[in-house]
Structure formats: structure tokens, C-alpha cells
Length: 166
Length: 187
Image 1 (cartoon, each protein chain N blue to C red):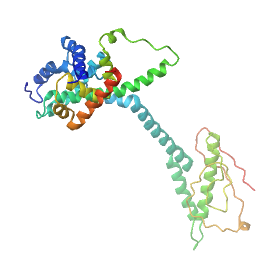
Image 2: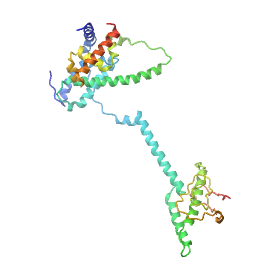
Image 3: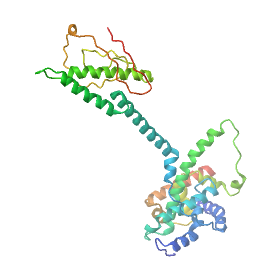
């Protein structure tokens, strides 16, 4: 595991290079499209940079970043719901536009189903099954009890099984 | 590991691994907070507008109240008039006689009527009720909302038979473009 020094400009740049794609991977499963995920990833590093001087290396730095990223994604989802309400009002009486072909190409049924999960459940799934975190590590990253992680994972699996029919 | 777990891992890697191959975008530099937008836009703008409106309305109310109280937009004018009237009333007192309440009340009542008339001419008259001079003797027949500002404690007799009809003289008006207003005394 790489070591980082809090407040070091060079170390933050290195952190960005080492973790950007993994953070982006988590966000892609939580927000509606790739562009939004990229925007959220940048927002995550902006927020992390603002707190970089006060970061304490008592927890893995990537877990800290994931925690910020998940909060950013949750905020984005809230704003997205407000934007969607506005869109629905604007579209009243008009035919609904078809899906964007570019976004369809990168989405599988599984990914689409994950995006419909509550964001904290989606985050738990991606940390467990993509990044390979243990439940304990996820609990530390999200600042919740291990039992909460287990119940989120269970609920997420149940939901996916129902949606995907597996 | 269940089938679902295996499917999950397979699907996640299939969808997310290509992301790692994408070039790393330059890091967006931390943006400064935007207090100006908060103040000038959105809810901040609405709040700012309300505050400014409130201040403007309060200032206007103070001005109008001042004018209504003094008969002039300049409070010092009314202040001088009151000072002169007090001296005049004291001079009229006979030896051993006390109190200038009646004298001052008449003066203030006339002033209240003048202000009410002026306000009506300006279109500001609320037109409800008599001038609020506390002197029951004169009953303040001026229609309109001119509060005569008569705070003097009048001790005039309450017997209506002893009342004399009010004498209305030329009103002290603000030396502006508006001419003096004549008020016909009530019955």
C-alpha cells in the first residue's frame, strides 16, 4: 500500500493518478451515466483536496475517498430527482425521447438494475464485488457498523434477484 | 459464492474494467466557493431582494410617519413651531394659573387636521376617523388619518355645553408647491 503525506501537493497528485479510475468505477454504478460519474469523480477529488491537510492516515486513503465519492453520488441523485421532476413537467404532452445509444452501449442489465438501488446499497455491492473489500473494510470506509453493511448487501442482492429474475 | 455473486462480479468487471483503460483526465482544480452567486442568485437573490425591499419600505414608513407627525418632511420645522407655541401659551397664562395643555392641544389639533388635508391632497389619506387629538373639547373633526401628534394631556372640561366651537385658522403647511388647505369646522 502506498504511503501519502497529508497536505502534500505532490502526494495528492499521486493519489489522484492511482485512484481516479477506481473511484470512477464506483460512481458509474451509482449515478445515471458516465459523464455524471466523471463529474462526480472530479467533485470527489475537489472535496478531498479541500480536506487533504487534515486527512489522518489512520484509515486507508482509498476508503476515505470512497466515502467522499459515495456522499457526492448521493447528493447528485437528490439533485437528479429534482431535475427529473422539472423534465417531466417540461415534457408533458410530448412523446418521451428514446434512450441515448451511447449510454445503452455501456450499460448491462445488471448495471442498470444497480443504478436503481438505493445508493448506499449500490456502493456496498461495488465495494464488495468489484473492489474486493471485506465487509469490515466497507464498514470502516463508510463509517457504519459491519452488520449494517451485511444487511445492505443482503437487501441489494434480494432486489437484484427480483429485478433480474435470477 | 452464489450464482448471483458470480454474475455480479463478472458483470461489474465487464462494465467497469474498460474505464481503467481510458486516459486519465486532468484534475479539476478546486473551485472557490461562490458567495456572490449565493447572494445574487437563486434563493439568496430572493432573500436579498426581500431584505432590500423591507429596508426601503421601513425607510418610507419612517419618512411618512415623520411627515404626518410634524406636518413637514423636516422635523426641525415642527419642532421650532412647537417651541414657539409653548412660549406663546406660557405668556398667555395669567398669574397663578397653571397648565398650557388646552392651549397646546388646540395648536396640535389644528396641525393634525392640516396634515390630514395635505395627505388627502397627496392621495395618501386613509380617510378614516377624526384627527386623534385627545382634546375632547375640539373633537378633531378633520377627516383623514392625520394623527395630530397631540400627546399633551388636555384637562379641558367634559361638559359639552361649555365647549366653544373650534376656530380654525390658516393651517401651517409645508412650504411646498401645495397651497394652504381650508377646513370648514364641523357643527
